Amino acid sequence: MDLLKPIKKFLTRIGLEPGRKWKKVAIVSFAALVGLGFYILKVSHAVSYLSDDPQACVNCHIMMPQYVTWNHSSHREVATCNGCHVPHDNIFNQYFFKAKDGLYHASVFTMRAEPQVIQALEASQAVIQSNCIRCHEDQVTDAKMGAFVEDHHSKRTDRTCWECHRDVPHGRVKSLSSVGSQIEPIKMHVPEDREIIPKWLKESMKEEKSQKPKTISP
Image 1 (cartoon, rainbow, N blue to C red):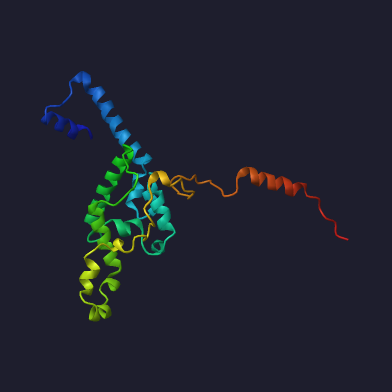
Image 2: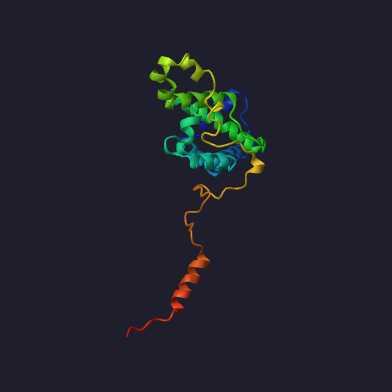
């Protein structure tokens, strides 16, 4: 079966079918583009973004302060990055928003146009606020408080949660230049054979052990 037949038909229909002498060049160029696409997918760890693993969000290193602060917060036990930063109303909207946000982040990082202080855009703020209420609904709609606090529900929903809870869960906002590289083992960047004890120290310990005189029992 000629796999290129549909492509030939499409190019012929739009008047872009290459002449006989250009066919080899066109085929090689097309194959190179496909290969480059697969290479970019591999280098960018694109498959990892389909998971809920928070370490996928620090593939580009820029989000390291956000990852580290989350990893040392109480939210680590109950929510991942996707739990707060993508919508949960339906699965199609979830992956659409995730892809849109991911492509925006990748474009900004590739062009090195990231701002010094990373802050959520308006669309992301709406999603985060919605997820705060989704998880903390019992606190937001406390029936006992609603019974004696005037306009209890509106007072708890007419502002963003982080206007009061400013340090949850990422701590205070820090600029990229004020935050150094964090020593945090990220599995995407750590080789599989990484060991805590360096090789030179292991060899030194072996030598010391072999040179230690044996004690003779009386």
